[in-house]
View 1 (tube, rainbow, N blue to C red):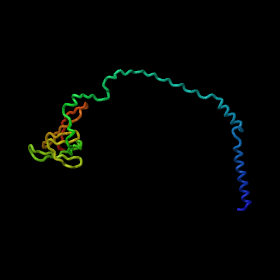
View 2 (view 1 turned 120 degrees about the vertical axis):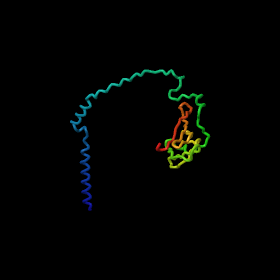
View 3 (view 1 turned 90 degrees about the vertical axis):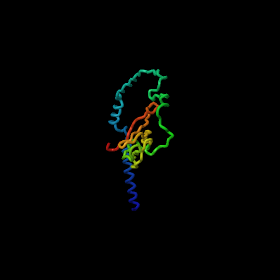
View 4 (view 1 turned 135 degrees about the vertical axis):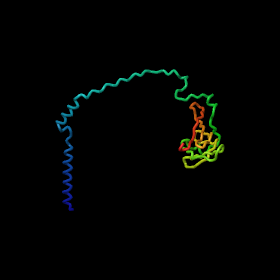
Length: 176
């Protein structure tokens, strides 16, 4: 490209830039119709404002029952909490106490008469021998009796007032 072409390209660029800037030189002030429209819009009053909402008056309430028992806490009868059955926290835990009672399945028995032993399968598919005095389930369930078709248990459950109550339960053979 020679010097003449370069000068021609520069000249065309200057003319294009000047014409583009010339269009921007006129503003809102140069158009009388636009000025008239803007002045009429600004002269109109704005829409009315909505009234401020009226605040509700609430009835005051005086709480005078400060000395009474909290209605959201359970009543504790200390005399009842100390007496009656309660779980032995110091005894060693047995393997079947790790499972809920309803997840244990009686598979059968071994022996006869007073020397009967119950067979109980835990959810991890391990069969355990159970005799009266063993503990099963998560509620301190103590085996009371083993029969050929059923294992009778006594569970200790909280009565909600700090004490414990005994509840009978059992595990039966699946087809019984």
